Image (tube, rainbow, N blue to C red; front, side):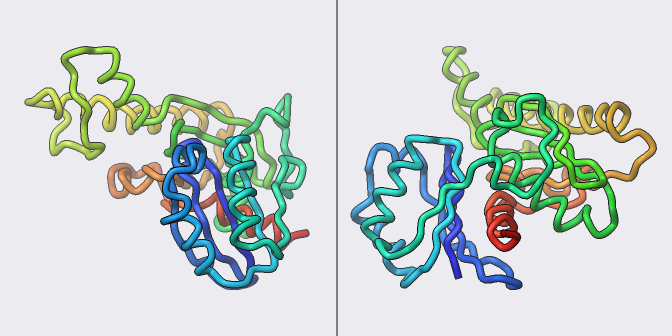
Amino acid sequence: MFLAIDIGNTSTKFGLFKEEEPFEMVFHFTTSSILSSEHIEDDLLPKLVALGDLSSIIIASVVPLGTDAIKNILLRSHKEAKITVLKNQDIPIVNTYKKPDQVGIDRLLSSLAAYSKWGKEVKKPTIVIGFGTATTIDCINSDGEYLGGIIALGIEASAKYLSQVAAQLPEIDLTFPNHILGQTTSESIQSGILYGSLSMIEGLIVELHDEVFSNQDVIVVATGGFSKLFENKTKVIDHITPNLVLEGIAISAFNK
């Protein structure tokens, strides 16, 4: 049994794994609170201590300062555990990016997990859509090689930025309105952000089919904190699983 930690820009996720068994999602914690040391003593530290003995803890991070902060907390909760911070070269996936180290480790891990779960056995290419702080689209060919991808502003960041730069536009709840045609300002923003993101995703998937995967059957997987918003909203997404990065950490660990 080991603990996997995915440190993202917005949220840090914790999951327990045991080989050949489904992982157990334990909890998540805001990365900003980790960076500012808020609620560590009364919230995060007790949750970590409650996990009991752990022989190994594996971290994947896109926030270097968050990595240091988590390691300091873990030295208090599990000082006997072996702590490993993954690097891109630790991920068992062929990375064909022109500058391989520039790919976020979260993108590599989610690509590895998606292909391993759905593409590998049937030898099909896989596209992973990550709905997080950024909206990312990553492509893996039928041999499991990471090809590259697309990065766009995430839906939450888009909504917050719009309310900040336009004085009369409010912040909104990130839910799909009942109709594309908004009849209030909030509905109009919701439609623009969510239906706009959906249309962008659908359009880019079509373009990637044409440019990268011509005449191939592609499996499309959505992940990330906002992926569930798009459930039953489109036919282009085959699978939705919010915690692919954690699963990629486990695959990397068990394939060493």
